[in-house]
Image 1 (spheres, rainbow, N blue to C red):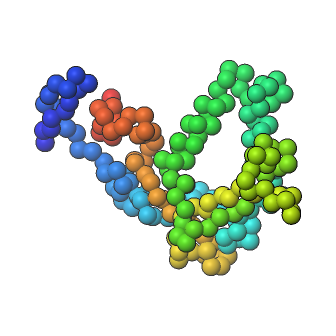
Image 2 (cartoon, one colour; image 1 turned 90 degrees about the vertical axis):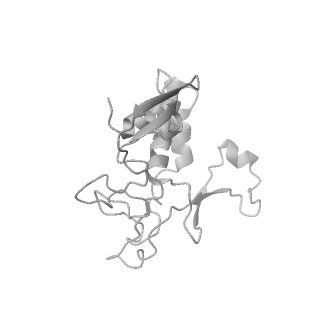
Length: 192
């Protein structure tokens, strides 16, 4: 079919439009049309590793996420694991965007579930937090758990399975950069 496209100078041009893949992820795999589609279970390459084998968060014996972040992104590059070329922040930002495109991890389940991540005493969030509990000398940051298939998470033979909430294609388009303009159409239509 034909469509009108506006260029940056708002000039109308007519162009042949390629058939585009749907944005909900369906039919990206012709043998398995629902793989990667919105509101389907996230496909795993390995089994889930919950603390109780069913639904509780694992990692109670792992380092605190705040400590890891502080060490990786400390301004003193020589003493941290930061990039000597200043790419650490860009890599974290890009990684967050990949997560957002694949799973939209910021959208909590229903009912909403939160885990309390303890804030270390040496962290600025600890000192400045309104959530500081002087009685227990602790600060926690609420961490929203992702949406999951409500039919899962009842037993070790049926562990919790996350649901895909947001998918734009079977490959990462980073649509927040392209904003569904010509470049995005070219990527989705496999035009090179």
